[in-house]
Length: 324
Image 1 (cartoon, one colour):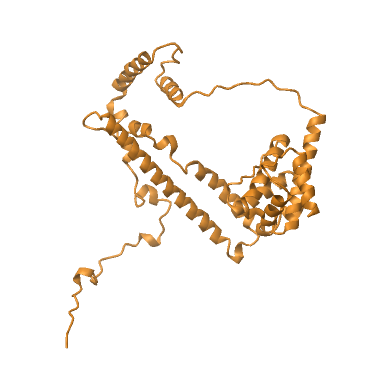
Image 2 (cartoon, one colour; image 1 turned 180 degrees about the vertical axis):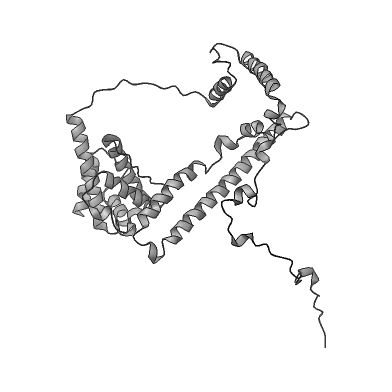
């Protein structure tokens, strides 16, 4: 209990208010629950984020990840900090923060390091750098600039009317298509016979949102199935001691999968209107271009004709009840 009170005093000393931890009792409960507690992970993330900014540490701890991934990220963060407690860096991941004592030690270490870093910054402040304000352009402006660059028409002035810009783009695009041919651009994937009415545009946008949400769920399901598959490999005795290596390989690929978990701008209504008919061409998994990396010598043997053994539901005679 005394250790918990000391850690609570450390939290107040480094500037964490009651919104993070209400009192000693709340702190004691989250330490008792450990990494499975969302409050425990959030508090660790707050402390490590402040250390990461002040000490220029590359590793980042995420509170939204799985418990196993959270502990691996925390171990990597401690390793970059050159933590003297080897039990938090090496050995089975599931055993590193298992006891209440180990959680008290990790809080004590992180908070004292944070206090030391803050004191160093206070005694040796860095010279103020000139603040540069970056103005981010809108997506429409960025797309317009890309079109202008692709067609070599230069950056349009800021005071030019929008209709003049599009007239210039249409004129230049017509010239390019005359030189390269109409087949260069292709035909639109969405090409209605008649112009759509306002109600139809709204309905189309609603359908796009529903499909986008549906495929987002499908992608999330596939990623979850991948996570479960990776976890199932770690149940084997042969993989004991290799948890860090497996997690490191999986985490690297997982970051890319997280970036494509939702469709975003690539699947919105604007992307639909800009899509050409070649988007609908999908290579089959059985085509030669795909199979060249997956085929084997066994699969080259083609099964011959086999007799029809029947067994179809409609071929089975209906059982007739007999009454005696």
